Image (tube, rainbow, N blue to C red):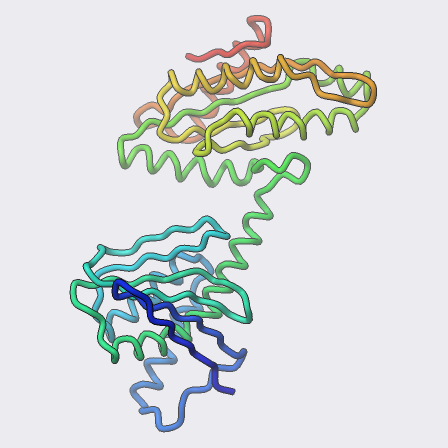
Length: 307
């Protein structure tokens, strides 16, 4: 069964393309052996990875042999993806990618010269091979995200922290930007469980996670490390800025007791805050931040401590 392709012209040298492929891709009759071999190569290349950026990178590498362009940009707002490849050019052509009514995102290619009609036909044909590998990569991203979310609080979990901390440290060291880490612990959390039960303890953790999220910035990321301990990763943040965020969280928690039945459970938290040092790895940064947390608790709790 042949797929249907509809091109909708727009202004500024941009065309939008809604692509829908049937599960079985059948090459047109009369295709040359060279074209068939190329198609098999591209299909195999695109199936070699489940990472969105690698799938797109492989697709663009194969496309460069047939269409001249300087760079590309892929956007999928549902997955908060905005990926750029190469450099931008004066002219562009964009494709809205969809499969069985499912939006896969928008791919824009740019070049210094206008794309020809033949370029458009070639790209439309090549994009048909991208649909299923791209959808599989997005599904894999869904699965990875689900595996990295704490079911109780909705915060990211320890697995996500391990992945993201290593990546953020690499970015910080490569670009010379600051990176801060905060570890938060609920003071006397065991007392809440003992006096009100574990259901109350769970509710406290859920409400606390929501409160922390409301106090941190959009670029900060919250993780539940385990038990009543949370970690906040603050990219591109110096120590002074991280201390302001930590103190804001501490004050907000103290000022907002958690409703539980007819009671209101008063909470306080202690936080340790540090920033990345030259040559430091994730384990060293975490241990130093953890030491600051224990210093805050040893000093009387309900406070923020840094080294």
